[in-house]
Structure formats: structure tokens, C-alpha cells
Image (cartoon, rainbow, N blue to C red; front, top):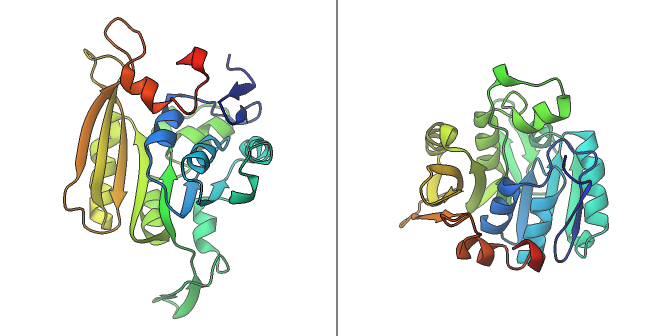
Amino acid sequence: MASDFFNYQQFTIRQSHAAMKVGTDSDLLGTLATGGRTILDIGTGTGIISLMLAQRYPESKITAIEIDADAVEDAQYNFSHSPWEDRISLIHISLQEYLKSNSISPNLQINKSTNQQINIKRYDSIVCNPPYFDRSLECPNQGRTRARHTSSLPFPTLINGAYTLLENDGLFSVCIPPEVFDEFTRLCLMSGFSIYSTTCVKTLPSKPPKRFVLTLKKGITECPQQSTHCLRNQDHTRSSWYKELMRDFLICGEL
């Protein structure tokens, strides 16, 4: 059973209420995602990715949105007990409702079907650790279902929403498993994104990829980057890549 608290060097994550606990996916996205002056964290959960980005990008302003009330309770606690409380705004809302809001920011676009002005705040960077399990595998815990299953946030809704909310040339970063990589990438390309970078992560050198940290660009990418790394060496010790990745976050004894 996961502990109710997880300590990093500069902040602590309380995770007693949120369905999804601290894990490798959040560490990978928090350290590999590209930030900016303004960042949107979709489905923030405990807030861990927002906090990691706040640490990595000292000038950033971050908006974190979350649909689940239990996760919001943990995220609010974690933000308020961090050094960056004044730079992170938490909103208890789904992405779908956030997109419908007409009073987010003074940046206007026209809804062609109704000819109405819609206020949309646009971000330099958007991050999301998206739900990726099929609906047929849903579990009885509603919070865990929302966090893990695409029925709560289908890929097309997430991808199109991110495209709408990004500035031109803005970047959208996700952490996804190999079984949905092709579908997710195809939908992103169809929506107008280009692949900016792909980081393939294995658990061991001899194993197939476990996760992909994918960054998409709202615009054209001239030279997309691709790399492959391992979390552990073949003898199961932590790899030098992982140690360097987490050097500013994990406490020394955990590296």
C-alpha cells in the first residue's frame, strides 16, 4: 500500500485522497515535459507534475485543473505547502467544462456556429498524464476510473482541447504506454500537431518499451528528436540516466 505522503527534495506530496498515487509515469512527465511561461496541467491529480514543473521553470505560471474532488483536496494541500503556492492556480473542473468557459481570459476567438465571442486563455505548454485504459476494464472506484480510463477523457477530446488551448508553436507533453502510442500519435497528427520529441523508456535494456514521453508541437517541427533510455541497468541497479533525471527531486537515499 502506498504511503499517504511522499517526500521530494523541495516538496512533499500528500496522496491520501487521490485515486492515483506517485509513480514512475508522473516522475517521467514531470522531468521530461517541456514547460514555458504559462503551463496548463490537465488532470493534475495530487499536483505532482505541476510542482515539478514549478521547480524546473522558476518564471512559470501554472494552471492545474482536476475533475475529481478527492484529488483536488490533496492537490490543494500540496500546492499550499510548497514554495510555489503563488505561481500555481488550482481549478476543480473537467477539461470539457474548462473549454466551455467564456471568461477564462481576454484572448478572443469566434465560434463560427453561433457567431459568439469565446474567451480562451492560451498556454505556452500543456501537460497531461492521460487516462488510457479501455472502458471495458473499468473498476468500481469512480475516482480511479476517472484517472485511468478513457471514458472520462477520450483521446480526441484531450487532443483537440490541448490544440485549442495552446499558443501557436506551443508544446503538448504526455506520458503513454506503447499499446496506445500509434493511436494517440495518429490522432495528434490529424488534429494539426507535429511530433516534437519522443522519449522511449524501458525498465531494463533487454525489455521492450514501457512508456513513451511524447511532446507534440502546435506548428511544424523541422527536426523531431527521438531517444531511448532505461530506468535500470541489466543488473537492476538504477541507471545513470535515471539518476541524473531525478537528481534534483529524489532524496539521495532513493536514487
